[in-house]
Each structure stands twice: as structure tokens, then as C-alpha cells.
Length: 444
Image (cartoon, rainbow, N blue to C red; front, top):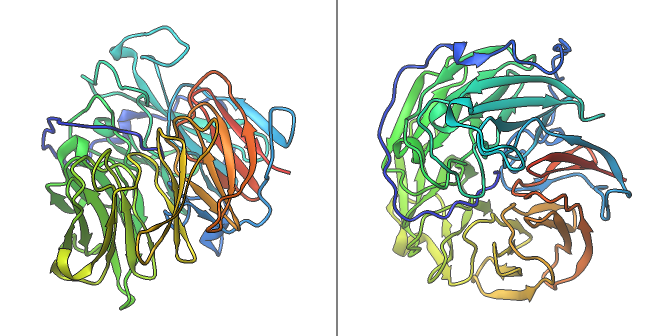
């Protein structure tokens, strides 16, 4: 998901790591269509694709200038496709392939309940032009799994892609790498823990490594070799963290990896996993939203009460709570990740239906506006040009002006009777909106 609605209180995580298992856990014979044999073209600019959760930067920003403002089932609907199974992961795009994950066989909304021994995860590759399934690969679940995953199902982790292919994370069922024709490359085990709120952190690709937040599976953050799946480094004590790590460039032009855990934000050296700095958040809950950053300052939301947001400067060393924490706020979100633009932070609360804009220098609210009909929102915000897109769980998308004065530009409705937990993906000048049952492609 890209999604990331995972309220948690206490859970038991079982530390476990083994050498990467055989790709036989994937079934390359499981396919809706014959593979096209065409490898997606690698573009010279990463902004041409939507290669991971929240896009090229991991912060929900698209450079597309002509995304649609209004749509419905009968307006600006390029195509609509029923998906082979349920799920909450967000769609990604690389070249002429769309990727997302689904699950089948057990507790799929609208289907018979099934049984755990029938549970399977699927990596699905679709055509951006038509929505047709190009290929599908199936990974059988490692059991036992949770008897029930509240709200989000068994396919909430968004995949990550690059020129080599696609990497999918299925919780205790492992990390699986495929090429763009669907051929399995390797499988890695990052732990066997499960939780009633499921797993949702999405992999991140960086300089020949795959970063995987396996907080649920083993209370650890892993760096895996992109070519082999072998462990490069591992950081333990990653607890109650459902968010995906973000690579941030500090004011010394150095890369830092930032991840939020219960009570703290951590800055790590992405090359070695060495902890560079730690900052207290004063947030007493688990951490779900993924952080964003602007000009070397990280902005973090989380929690249900008390302190719910903060800003911290990067490039520190050791405990930087007193030296680098810029501000804290009692306004935030327990689920949705924000966007940042021109000195302002924008987000919507996951259940209050309130849109927020805050000054990044002080944390003070510029506006706090209740949006009629918003209800629950689990999807993270999308920023494109001067517009912000917020999609609620029933399938309504609210388009808001990206300015420090609230202006609702449009309300669009795709309600299909299922939940919309995934964050919007971008394919060229089109939006990809995913429900539990369908993938919609909208564009003018």
C-alpha cells in the first residue's frame, strides 16, 4: 500500500534470516498471457517512469504537467481492468510495463473465504496502453500466515523497478526479483514474523542494493545485493515501522537513508548501514507514513495523539534531538504520507477528512480545512504541478491547489464497492488508480 495504513500496538517479531532460497518458489509457468519478449526501454531520465512507491524520488512528486483534473467512469477513462486478485499495493511504471501485486486463494474481498493453503501472491505486468495483462507470476505463501489481515490484505507492498527488472516483497514469503520478461532471478528470506495489520513497507533500489524494511518480519532493515539477493548489511532494532526508507541528500551533498521507527527518526549511511544520527520524535505510536525532505530537512508524520509531526535537519551525528530537531507539532497523520513544495508541507488526515498545510520552517498550520465527503484516506498524496491529489478509501479523489490557501479544484468519483488503499501512480500524462478489484487509467 503504497499504502500504508497499519495501526499497530504490540507485536511479536521473530528474528530470522537465511541465505536466499531458490527461485523455484516462484512459478514462471503461471501466466495469463505468453510473455511479449519485449524488455521495457530504459529511459535517460528517471522522471519518465514511476518506478517505485511514491515515484522517482519516493516523495509522491510527478513532473507531468498535463495530468487530468476531472474524471469518472464515463469521462477521461482511458481503460479499466479487473485485477487477478485483491491487494493494496500501488501501481508502478517502467517503460512499457505497469507492475503491481495481488493475492488470491484466501480472504479476497468478494470471493469465498478460501483457506491458507490456497494463499498465493502474484506479480502482475500490464500494458500501459490497454491495461491487458502481459504476464503474471505466482509465489506460493509460506505458512502459517495471519488468520486475518485487517483492511489491507496480503499484497500491500509496492514493487520497485529498474533496468534489470522488478523486485517484489511479500513479507515472510520473501523478496523476489524478476527480469522484465517475468523470469525469476533470485529470492531472499528476510524473516518469518507476521502481524494482524500485515506488512506494507516497499523495497528501494540504490547503487546496486535493494533496501527492505522487514520490521514486521524480523525487526530489521536489510540491504540486499541487487544481482544476487545476498545480504550486504543489516540493521536491527527496527521496531514498529511500516514505512519505506527514503534517500535524502544533506547540505554536504552526501546521501543519507532516513527511516522512522517507534519514538525515533534514524539517519543511516546507505552504503554501510552505519547509524549516523538519531532524533527523538516524541511520537508514542508505531510509524506508518514515509518521510519527505526538502533542502536537507526531513519531515515526519505519525501517531494518533500527542505529538504527530516533526522536522529534523540531516547531516548530524549522534543524538541530534537538541541540535537538529527544528520543531514538533500535534497535527499529523497516522497513515498518509505528505508532500512538500516551496516551503510548505501538505497532507490529509487518515480519518478526520481534514486537509492541512504547514509552514516547513515553524510547523505552524497555514490552513486546516475539513473536506466534505473525504472520510477515511489511506493513500498518500500525489503532487503534480500546482495540484495535489488525495484519494479516499471509497474511490473519491479530491484535487486541491498546491498553494498555502485551500482551494478544492475537483472531486472525482470511481466508487466500485471495494476499497481504494493504494496510492496513485503516474504513467506519462495519465493517472493509475487502484482499488481492491480494478486498475483504472484516467487521462485527458
